[in-house]
View 1 (cartoon, helix red, strand yellow):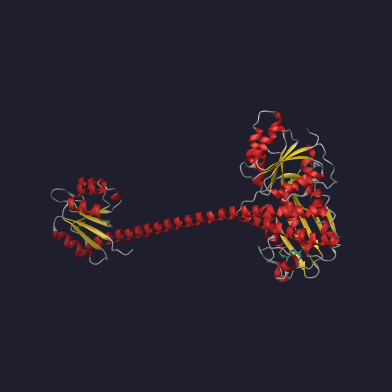
View 2 (view 1 turned 45 degrees about the vertical axis):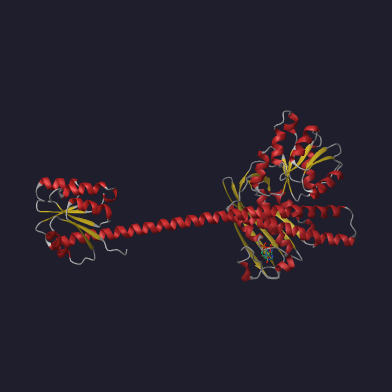
Length: 531
Ligand code: ADP
């Protein structure tokens, strides 16, 4: 506080004011004089005072009346006022004085020590109040600044999310085309040397797709936007599925892979099977990637059980290159790899374990690693699940099986991307499906009204009319056929909320792009007989 506190001295006699100033001496305050009640009211309305010393007996307007007026100003309702009077001991003055809002009385003849003592108390109070006011103002300013910074950060986060999801969609669409074309070429009896090139192409595109998905996943987790599902699933089947997805690499590298499941683990449990698969695929994927000889053991055992909640511990052990002691603590950090040559030799971004750790911890679990260079590593994590009394779950997983002909089926493919059209069309022709094509939702709507289809494969993002809108329009057409017509979405999105949206718009299911042929086949084949 830079300014000196101000005191208003009110008395009709200048002599009395001079005596007061003399008695108070230098208290490092500024004195303002008023020689009448009216002048006091005017000054109090204008200036912020620490205290008023008010003479009671004045001609025209006495001190009580002046104070009543001063109090009417809302800023002065708490202004400390001390009356200076010779008549304090008379009841009339005491009651009137207190009623008009005095905080104290000083009786004449004034004793200098008492005057200085009382004034000092009020000056100190005033200083404290000012300091508090400043502090409050300062805090309010900080709060405002913080809110502004928070809003800015949230805006930036939203922009980042939007950018990443748009970009990943844009990247995944052509990538989808490349991966599917490679798959098609593989099926077309390539020569040996062509096979090798196709394998390289497949490795690179798979890696690229994983990177795009990892970055997207990581940004989702970072933004706290990840949600977990609770579905019933069979643990043993899930682990078997993980093994199957690596069978190609395991055979190619002549490794072994064993699965051990503790008998205590119930056949069916509740949890997020998709995220568990993602965690296991990351860890088993690393184990396969960093192991040249020997094998991998994936084991699941019951760690503890409390009522119907079971904690399962998973261990993924490999006989690979291991991780140096001084690197073990940092491999869970994002964008970190054990050695600088890792990317060159093995690929990857160093995001996998950061995502894996978050996925485990967000579900209330823990993850750790034990490793020895040149001997191998064991990654272990524990996750809680709810026990189910069922012994089996209706199997809608994509069991590998030989594709059979879907002759007799008529499908409408709604897709604006030419390469995607071609790829879907090639597979459908292979399975002898009769097909029709629409390049956007609008054309699809017309075709659906003019023809009878067994199923519609519907891309979601298209010009003119999106897949969502087209589905809504089809579902609102009068005949029962339009309500029953199976519509399966083709989507590049891996997000839960998009899957929920697909369901909400009345679609029967979805296939994620880049789709694998068996997913496409097993999504459409159940509708073959339903004409
Ligand atoms: P990346 O995409 O590089 O695999 P991760 O986050 O999955 O990223 O792994 C980070 C690093 O941890 C790897 O680059 C590797 O150096 C080390 N690492 C992970 N798993 C293993 C393993 N099973 N054996 C040896 N090193 C591993």
